[in-house]
Image 1 (cartoon, one colour):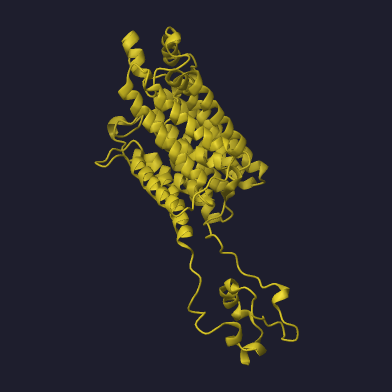
Image 2 (cartoon, rainbow, N blue to C red):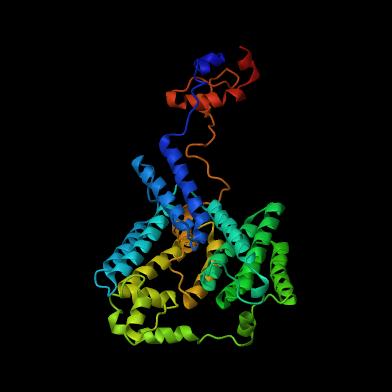
Length: 444
């Protein structure tokens, strides 16, 4: 049997190409990664919107194209898309009875797009989870560097920020990047990659301390302790020693040069739990009957308090903010979504990363309530994707498995040479295996 008998003339030029639907699916994956890169920069204003808005719009366009070619489907239980549909739907409904319907509609629109982006992340096939985490880590490292270079002799020893960005929300975003850097350092096997991610985490940790957020500093300490425990459990003994040593070295250096904000020293000397945030909640509770069932409208908590007390302040707590804005129904939906993240995230290969982010979210959820953070919703998407998250360095296109000829396709007495396949659709795979034919078959 000659090669021409196995591979018809011209078939080698007709190599298989990924179908258009698969190529679009790959584009959606890249759109998810691009959105993860842009999400931490949601504070930056540009003529066309923030980078997070541009990245989200780009992802949405790719997803709509994938819908046209029929390449997007949900692989999770019906609970996930139901929750991601009901929460924005209820947010829109609150605008109809809100005292501030215009503001409530804007806030509801934000929730709609965040839930939609999360749904797209969940539906990405296959979801390149590790690459998304890498995107968050790299982007947050760049954000930390941008924050650090804003330091001037005038603000040495004070809280650090740029463009008047709130220090707490900036610290929360960087904590997500720190979780990414820590997990990538722990899960990487190559020494160079471990060193790079340790350096990235050190830059972010240094920036969190310089920002001076008490919640950010507490998150840094707890995340460092948890990451160390993960190292020891994973038997990464050297990394388990280097990680806390690096954090202590950063603290010692900053303390020696006087760059630790006085706010951090004050917090260490007298940790405060009962501060002005609880006073804000007490003011909201005076009018509990106005919001406990149906809420006052998405994004209108500060306007509500200003109309009642003349005090413009947000509810600095994720729990109270959701309840005040969306009522008991919205609070129930948010709790269900949070529970789904934990239940599905425990099956994910990214579970250690999600656990590190959970530490920061619990602390900031009590003191800040960053429920509209784009970076947070990227993490929510990774958690809801659950066991379908891929931990590969780069996803392979669908159908890229190497073809292994079966025994039934080998003709007896031909020295193991392949016979003509019964199905013509197998011909490209046979062509790819011609190089593996025995030498006596090639010479015929």
